[in-house]
Length: 514
Image (cartoon, rainbow, N blue to C red; front, side, top):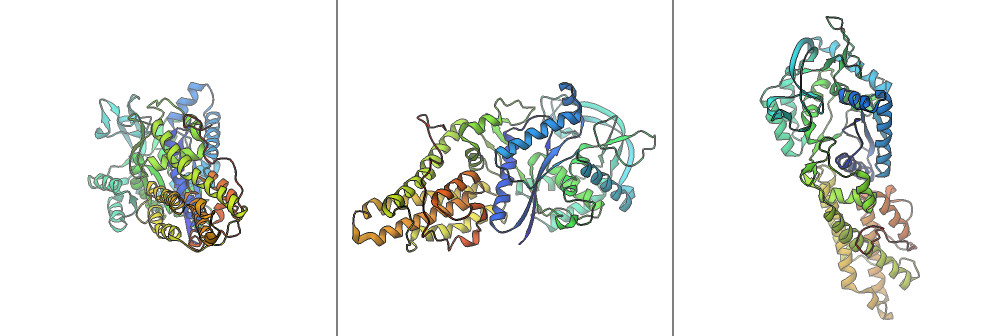
């Protein structure tokens, strides 16, 4: 059983979850569920980034303390992830005492191993509160941050502690040369290679007069207490979640995969590896940077002000349908656009009409022709095609070619299409009229039932609630989550007793969910 420690970016606690947050968390959840079905020992981490100037401002606007504010926001996020059936094993918050202790220890360890990596100097520049970063000239358009165009940049001048990132130029060049799959997809890797090739700059890692932060553990020359820069606090969450610095943290660390948005690759693939190298700690194995989702050309974010809520999207057709749609429609290696029309079309055509209708028809025929008990039957072309197609499904899902989740769900849907075509071409209703063709009917019903069971397993990472519901209707033993991919080729449904239930994906006259 292989260890698979998977993380997502921790969400900033200055507002409610939106559809952009959901895309990343659902995508990571699909990867986690896939690896569990593959037999891996998965630990799936998510969490909240709760310090920084943005949070303090948002709390002040609400007239509450920062801690009260982040407690409320964290509760909203956790409840939303439960509603979307996100199967994380751990939820870390950067206000947790154990995390604060881990951050202080990491900073002290860097100072102990490489004391020249921290130094003080006065710095000035344009600061984006939205990014919690000083911005370079190429990151500013018309006087505003390209990622937060509605926010005013602040000219900031203060004496801070700096991390000597420039010392790790050759180390990072070596990482990217020796580990070409460290950062994927290739477009993101090329961007970071170009950035590193331009030469690195040291980074300011503290802020003066910032009360809502982890106090920086090194004493300043002027005696002023400094707050740890929010990113130097947030990035270590992946490490502190393992129990660092306590003995045994290496049972989880290093992480096998960080799933992040493409806008924070520099922090995760330049700053974070350099921090770990400075502390003489192993770096993560892989980083996957997904793209952005837009609605009418606008990116989902608090600052962009996209005008509908995540709850509205869930209520449209239910949580599982939204999970399916996002990873069917939005490429996990690029950008994509959300539209209500496409959501309705895919729900109706692929979930309700194709998969839901296939399941309903087959269960009804087993009830009618075989008294609800699945017969024994020979393997057919449907079985052979399904098993052959597993190769492409795994190639899209296991990371060997990247995490092309949209291709994985496409391969699973191909089995649904084959199942419908198989039923139409074999016409079990006609076979049932001739006693002499009883064996043929058994072969057809057994084969398509096996196919439905395989579809449950393949689609489980995407639609975990509905696949468990269908699994019960098929009369299959145990749960879908207990199945393993290596058993699919030999799966046998003979003797299962079907139980017809309500439609998996109900439709009203307008083609939307009830």
